Image 1: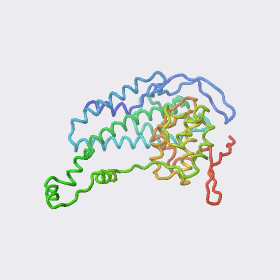
Image 2: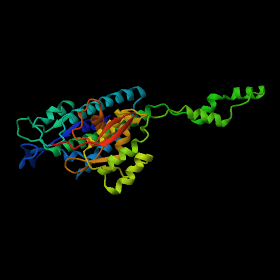
Image 3: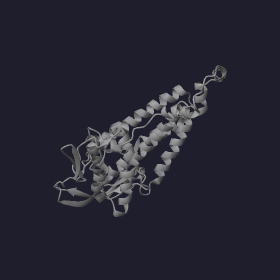
Length: 347
């Protein structure tokens, strides 16, 4: 189980670097100055910039860890799966802490930020200094930490998914279904007695009806047109047609659409619709899984970033902080709900 151990250790170890960086020191929301000081950096453990080797390393370790697990019996594999789920829960807790202390307007983070979000408590942090060491926390570090979390979670979920598929009982084939419904011996007896057999088409329909149906977000009548009218201004004109097809015809965009705003604004828009029951037939977790692969966003450093299920969960849960700069508001007029642009908050 050496590879599984290496994967889990690498996954849960955050290797911080200390580098000089020019950062903005805010006096208030309108006045700031720039100076060079030592800051934490974790760029090398994201999938961006020149750090693609980290993503490749995690992928290889994940694959080798799964090979280790294949040698276990079912009972021991289930025990390992339970441990992996505990690690996933710690990532969810870290996401919650990250969102609770994320700043929308400024990038002014205190030196004890890492201790505040409990990164050192939940995981292994290398090269972490005391909060009195004078090492600053930049907005770039906070965004890169979020990107590093997304990457780690992605491979952890892949490994958990691979194990769950391995442990899942094999799906019965149509031949198995026929044998279970009409054993050979009973078929002979039925033929001799002149009993009519159930038509094959009805057997297939019965089998199809027995398949589980997943939850899927559905927009109520009139919602998509109103939502498109609000959202389109946050996408380049070339993407308007793809956005309209996504909302009106549920045609997934390829590549994902880039939302030219903050991630919490996009998440808040869909959360408001869900809370107002203008998106139905699904759970919040289903809505998050629907959103994640279809959109990207631009962070505070004007860099395009991916969304993930757990990242959205931290933004859209009932315990998350309200968005300070929503892009829409929902008003009820008689028996109808109207989606209107939200007034700009004065900072």
